[in-house]
Amino acid sequence: MQFVLMINEDNSVYGGPDGSALIEATLAGHMKLAEDLVAAGVPFSGERLKSADTATTVRSDHGTVTIHDGPFAETHEELGGFYVIDVASLDEALEWAKRIPVPKGAVEVRPIWAMEG
Amino acid sequence: MAARPRVVAALAAQLRDLDTADEAFAEAAAHCLALAEPPRDVAAWLFVAGKRRALDAIRKARAEERKAQELAEVTDMADILTLPDPIPDERLRLLFICCHPALGPEVRAALALKVICGLPVGRIAQLFVVSEPTMFQRITRAKAKVREAGIAFELPPRRDWPERLGAVLLALELAFTAAYADAGGELSAALEEDLGAEVERLALLVAELLPEEPEALGLAALVMLARSRAAARLDADGAMVPLSQQDVRRWNHARIEGARELMERAAALGRSGPYQVMAAIQLTHARRAFDGATDWRAVLRLYDVLLALRPGPMVALPRALALAQVEGAEAGLAALAALPAERLALARPWHAARADLLARAGRCGEAAEALDAALALGPPRAERLWLEKRRAALG
Image 1 (tube, chains in turn brown, yellow):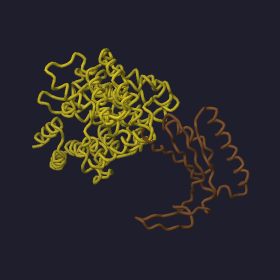
Image 2 (cartoon, each protein chain N blue to C red; image 1 turned 60 degrees about the vertical axis):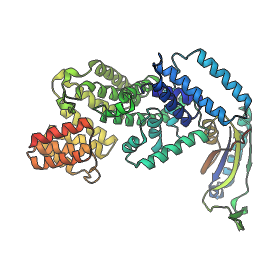
Image 3 (tube, chains in turn red, purple; image 1 turned 135 degrees about the horizontal axis):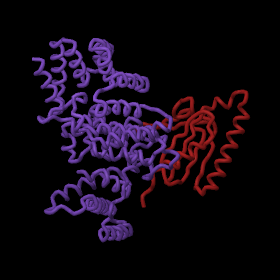
Image 4 (tube, chains in turn blue, yellow; image 1 turned 90 degrees about the vertical axis):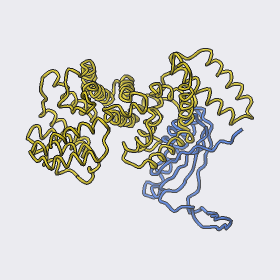
């Protein structure tokens, strides 16, 4: 069963005096996580996203399409990246989600809609 | 039906869907009741019949998947040739699934009561003091989340058990509350099963599987102590007999002894908690069978501890009654006066407790009013008869 683990981070923590060290540590954590996923034989993919000020949103309302500067929702935490993993159950997905390095923020775990047949 | 929890749990574990298991059981049970002669092993028969019905339904829904159909037929035949005996006990697995941390804490116990015990949604709504449509929606949503979110139909790994235990114990406590309030057996009769016996089995099962968890042992002891008095709770007319007036010769001493052993094991683990304190209160009451009197000072002290662990009017209420035993009815009434009367207006124990203390303080008119208020709330038969007797005695 495939799950997407969406990393919603408060990026302001990377801006402080220890910011660059924290970025280094977090990236190293992601490298380690990827190695662990490979070692555990879990099929996965994932990407890091550029910051939310680079986002452009296409909004649709019953046929009317408008384009906006910025992410779809303005929040303290923004989608910074994601993993897609293939594991047996939500419990396993949650175990991996707990291991994602997030200094401050949240990881949303959602099953991917499986195509039938 | 007494076989329900075991059969539904086994079906859910096999079919991996709570709704499918629930429906399959209902259909199998209806079919079973229509049989000219009841099957020899009702649980096994229901399990096999329920599974066949569910697989039929799945097959119909996926008629195009011939391969799956053939596979299903083969396993189905194997089941019919060898009736599983006994059918696998999946109740604990189902209990942990219903109490999964991915479900909201407000729905876990409710889901367990619905799925495992088969309690009607209306009754569960009463237990949680919400409307029936709200509870129905909560349970429906939780079932859908179990199905769609990929919650495993497995027992969680051992290291996760303590984290999930709180929700499991709360579910059992609420089921026990429902069973215990049912002194006259009306609910059990409606469910065609002894809910109290089922809760006791589940509580003992959890205690057996988690012998290092003192609160699991405490809850099992609490349930056993309450059950030890089952035979003494009704008089010849079917009216409820309050604890203090029960004939101790009708208490089940083996259960009291069993509970005491569980509590000793819990105490040896050195971590106290509300269930252990509640069990200690009930054990103090049980000592009347051996000492001839109740140590109300000990009961009061234990309620003080419980109130610190679980503050709230439903603990403060019995504490006020214990206080009245130690310091007199006026002290008890003063303690009751400090409680939020408006919030308790719909709680029968509140009116019954007030009536008791007012009568003892000689304020019979007010006591009668309190009894009328309790009776107006539509108590179950046994409680109604008891309240009516007290009302008649006041004149």
